Length: 285
Length: 285
Image (tube, rainbow over all chains, first blue to last red; front, side, top):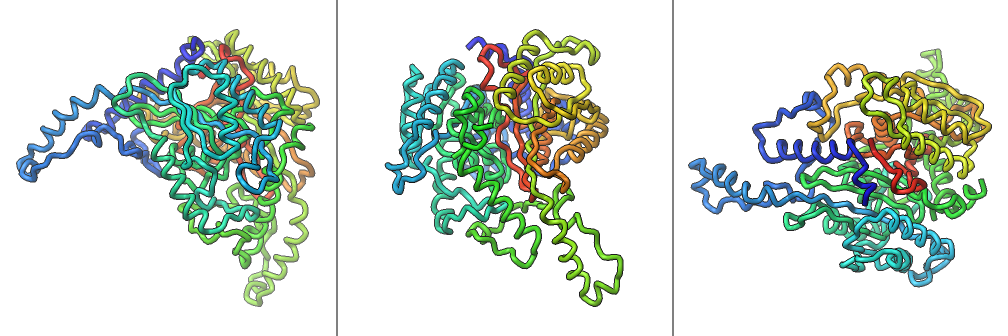
């Protein structure tokens, strides 16, 4: 983990800045003048600090008594109770998404759409990279589709100490939302968007959020799934229009790294990293 | 270049779909019903096909004579003249951005902010990766700041056959636009955004656009510059809110790959790829 410590100033600024700014913005509506000229600007779209419904105010139950509101007691109680919650939200979540390896496109049903020889090699290379990065993964979640499950299994052979391993139907490939701009050659049926869209959004809400207040230290979690799912998650997590997901492309086996700070700030550190693969192993199918 | 041919179906679909969809949408307003259910959806934001003012209609001069409009002659002429332009826009531009290597943060003036030993190693590793990818770079443009110029020089030692090499002040680091969400620890002065913002936008308009109609084959161009510049360019090129630029982080020496199709469709293939660097060489300062 020595290399993590070396990441230096940018990392510290991002972390500290995130925490400080977030606290002021999120926790004290009176102090919105941040220590930066940047706040003099009116952005075209505002960041929603409570995007995952885990903003610190959301963790405190509102008062039960209407009379409290009328007598202006609510706010005092609220601040008091919030003080007890505040110190517990301190951990950063590192969420690493892996796209499955190349697979047999000729297969009619999922079980026939298994990894090709190249796909297995890609998964092994990704596993090697994750191993040498020495990220202390505590959890691996993989889509139940054959190609994702196989990819996860090959990667897990390289990792040790993962406490929690689970598969999940919510992470299966699908059509998250009609892309903008549309693409004429990709034609999922209308009911696919209807069903897959809600299911992939459900996966996002389940897995992509800031750490719970019970989490004491930074975590590293691995999600092995699919290109459409990952691209949609990236747009949603960064609060970009989700229709933009098809403006990104992911290589097979590639690494996408999201960082979620305790205050709800989200950073994309990498999208589609596969530089550890020799050029002849690259594919995007 | 053998690996490029192997990229397979996704690549072909993206290219062909891009061309077909774009043509229908951009060139014939009557045929907006695309061959996809996706077009039944009303997106929250629309893709602007003429974002770089090089959409095919823009390449044909409007008629000089008002009487043509009244007599409905304009449209006929316009279509005739457009036919002559259409076949010439066929090339795809691959734009590869490199962030400079780690540099001496203690330096007061630019010339003292030179690459560290690690920064030079990062640049060499990036050069090696680009060399082994065998991308046929025709052009290298680098920021005139010391750290970017040094990085470009080290990379160019690894590349051969680059015809066009130039430096550019427009690509220097700066404060492109106040970020949303704001970050309290980063405090450029207000006039920085005012001056840098227009200058970095000027750089975007100069360098990031679809191929000109005179370009006959796909091109690969390298731009060696800075984190803020690259992140802002990515947001602008993908038509995402530019205020979102600080939601991304780039490792030193990392590769960001944008692909611009003849019809103006833009794809992000990678952001911040540095998987070819051993973990102990990674930094983000």
